[in-house]
Image (cartoon, rainbow, N blue to C red; front, side):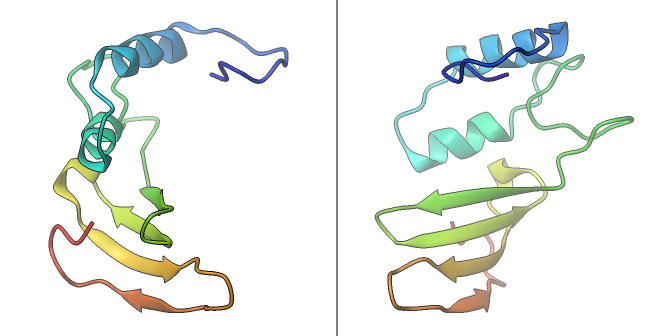
Length: 103
């Protein structure tokens, strides 16, 4: 559900519930955002979805301070970073992150 983009969209119960839950959670640090994106406390409309119809496949984290793009497999709460890409101007690097909690 877009909050700031002025387009026609459907405001369904799923989107509204997930937006309300996200609004109630803290958002002061990268860890807070990962906890938010991994939240599954609302069993009917979780932010992090594990089925049966909808699944969160991965989470992308863009860190402007570190100038990286990280791909997290599984629930972001667990911080299992699978790939990290440099987004530094003039530098193109990527590496496979095997470290647990390497966010």
